[in-house]
Image 1 (cartoon, rainbow, N blue to C red):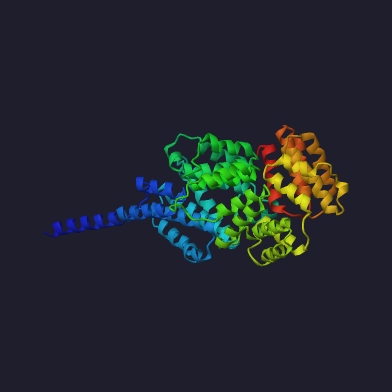
Image 2: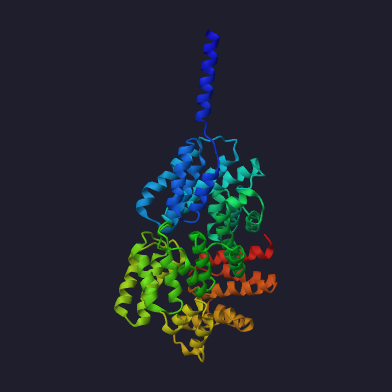
Length: 496
């Protein structure tokens, strides 16, 4: 009788223990939830997460998916009220994930991703030091997982992206990378992501939404393959209508590649269903697209909608600057000055664009209206219209030294965009000569553009010389971002 009782108790204890054991099951419901979240159908994704939890309370993959949802909402909308509850929630998720079996490849994979999500959100909300340590933890988790489970393909996407990012940390932040113990190769990182994107592994299909979002950015900004990034989006036939994450990425890259018409088409044609995350970033992008064609009333409407709905800090000063420019170009100086006061009082200076907007507002100066119009048209891809504005002008037509410098630089960019390389090279060199020791960004950007021109020609030694010239220039506008572009260029030329 005692023996029977022992057997029964042992059986019950074993069953109970098995019941409570945590696991990582990326099942069909979780996969569907991930797809919805990475299309920015957040509510639908959260409903599927709840279903997955109900079906298996011990499954920890839904915790990872909750992290994805919170990350995307916070990263795009920057709502301080949501941040107060969601940011501490990342630590709760980490604690839950640590209860899982450490012998599973998903253990460190999940922890690395949630740490990365927390780091990215922390940057948005000014917690730079916390972000650095979370970034380091993500890096260490994913590196260790690579060693323990070298055949676990899902690692490759985050690992490659982190490698590329660490490999291009600007010189001014190298001390931080050293302190955090992070060393990596940009080239190896991009190669890892590329191999993932084009792999036939079943996991690649599951994580395709994320991979097809990250890879074009790496192509565009780190490899300077802007046209290839746009072509990738088109060749992959990404759904820019029903996947808002991909649609926003494509519109954003289109604008930064001076393809305003392309961006406008994406924004207008996206699925307008209320099932998608309501985010003001669409108004932000459309405001720029309209401003770049000097459609001032339309630009004002979208920028105003953005500032009304957006609760965050990033690019807010930049947008108020653009609003002030709209009124300035309309001749409404009262409204222009009011908008400029908002540049001084709203937003943060975490981005180079916001820093520049604040600096311009504090100066009390207004840009030359002719050069401003030419700049906007050029930035929107309306190169012939921009060139027509400058036709018949020379640097001698401008009284102030900074205006003469800007004229030469603007002409160089327009020539460059029109494929008139020799005229562009001469104008860029002139811009460097005029502005090398000034605080404006024109000379440094001219050096980067020359580096890219010579790199495209295969003249790598000459390209490196100009990239290095950018790095050697002292403090100037957009120093960090331009240095990162220059460093990326040198790494590409050296194959590092």
